Length: 398
Image (cartoon, rainbow, N blue to C red; front, side, top):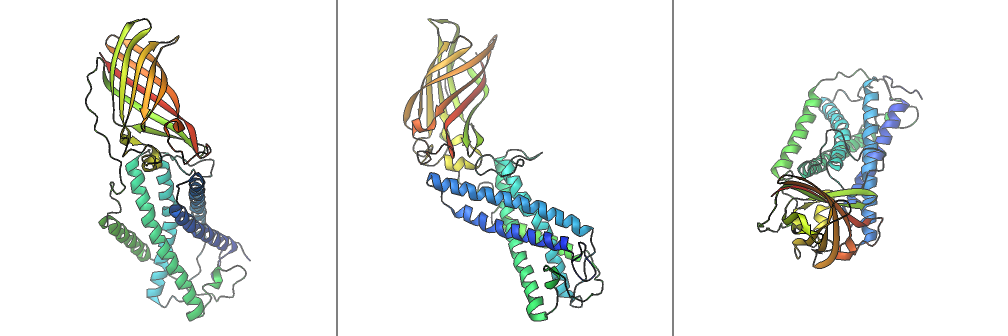
């Protein structure tokens, strides 16, 4: 069987790419559905869910590259004419379906890949690359949009595949021509049809179909940024402080399925007293209040707010009260962290730069999540690390 296409049949390269793409796409569909429906109440269930989603993503990206090679190969090949070109309406439908297939085979996995790159956490791709993409920022809004777009394009692809299969079966069962056999392995006995003229009408019709699908998705609220439920964020009272925080960040980092996931608290306050001279090694004190619901933690934000983890509905805030003492290098705040109704001693080393009435501080420490009863349903550190890194940096003025 020749490698290249002929006027009457497809070559072995085209056939191989066709069936390989079909295999990958038809594998990605059930993997994604089963992964979405799998619960994650226990450690084993979460590991299974992550495995299925990782498989779905990896197979999807493999399908993207296979489809890309297939399209590039098709551009270099002659395309056998239609065996029923005299039926113009059916020929238009067939070519429109091919445009939808080619476009969707790229857009569906690409939108899913972009969604993966815009967020953090849960189910990494099994490739040595691809967790991040150039020019794609980490953005919850973009993640929500691309997730909805991925779903919408997947529906278009699924319907097009069904139409494509239906058309192939019609040729085989009703028309009894060699259209299906031309794409099957082995040598085809199909006749050589007349050359079929091609126009831009099928492409235009495919673009209209994508536009209609996008319009339906928009009108049904699929792309609303507030579609996902959000945690209630506690309202923190203003604090009276000797040092006023001008800006700063409060981050946590946890290891999940061998990948670091970093989250940021958007709302927190700090009441700080500090004296450069100090008395008996004590230079002041600090009280930090944190609105737990203001945390964004990549794709697992909503899960983190649940009763098995931060339980934000019952414990909306965390408080750290500590004395500021001098260390051999820099300072440390030593006191208690109250989180999820549990109080645990905590030592936070930090470095301080003082210039007149402006102070810049950076500090880092580690806590164990199980000390606070967080994620007790995940006792396997391979799924969710026991240690949580806390990093804080701020600029304050006297």
